Image (tube, rainbow, N blue to C red):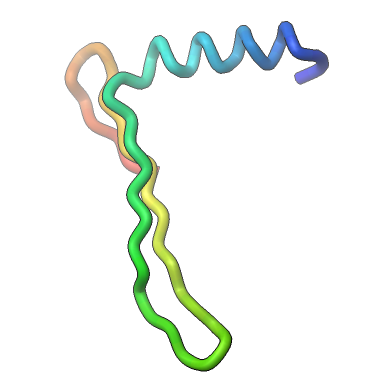
Amino acid sequence: MTGRAEAQAFLTRKWNKELEHRLIKELWAFAGNRIAVRYAYEYRDDSDQWYRA
């Protein structure tokens, strides 16, 4: 992408396609000065199919 207009167009298409999106953050473990976190991005499309990334 180059420029603000292309970024806006990309996000508009993305958000029109991805309905009910949510970001899930889950703490898995921690010890000393380290932590492990799981991130999952979920959304459904206009045909009610759910996706997770």
